[in-house]
Length: 252
Image (cartoon, rainbow, N blue to C red):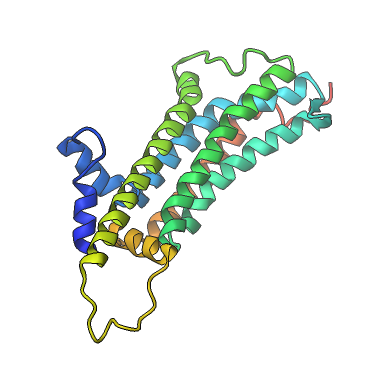
């Protein structure tokens, strides 16, 4: 019964008719897709590479220009913003190894997307604020193709993530509708009479479980991702910031 709901959800897109490529993408890399975890790893690797190589050196120069500034009435040292951004990069490198192995589908899929949104917003806000507050008004402005990609990347990723959440919501809504219709068509039998009816949360969980194709994410894949991204951050930090904070004290 739920298998039929899954098929109907995947092949009845809202509004316009989806192309075969779009349906194939949703089946493989969508929120309910078989290779969603691998897509997350590749997307996060690209994000970490772009943001670390295009932003860390600029944020490391801020403490050499100005000691600090006020944010919402609170004095923030320029060094603090550097470590806030570096902490965002660390979270980006670590969270897939935890989230992608969660048993709950809503944690494994939905929470990963919500974390992506928060991180992307921070990638936009922190450099922009530092650039405007520490006499570095050109920091948020792209200076070359690579920094342009680093600036544009979070916007594209935010749009793609919101689109994925919207598509997943539509699929689940159609699944719930189909599931409810099938439940009303089932005639009560001796085995079903007296059983408590399913709550809305239980029906939603059953539909989501039926939509997701469970392909176990190898722990070696997430471990290799985390190790390589942490190594990359150490390399970028030691090379691009060798002549600025944190390797220079920042005292003017």
